[in-house]
Length: 119
Image (cartoon, rainbow, N blue to C red; front, side, top):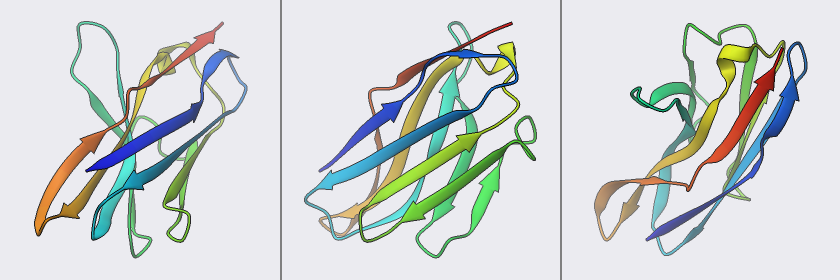
């Protein structure tokens, strides 16, 4: 099993910056992809950014150019930096990973952290 612990989030000002981190722990062979998704009530959870164990990144078009994701494999931690925040960035941000646990690649989610951007 994998546990994901998120930190960061809270109330932000439009135009400001956001920093989130997520640390993985537990009993697993390896973690492949880690990333962040976000969800607004009544809408589907959407991709923000992901990063592979090799460092390849993927960003949603809605945040491209404003977001940077980084990963420390030794610490099993990822970091998200989002600049030029907009009110529409308001959402619950969820940490995600897929990991090999008992030879099966399984998805895991954190509990989520609320980010509110005021105008």
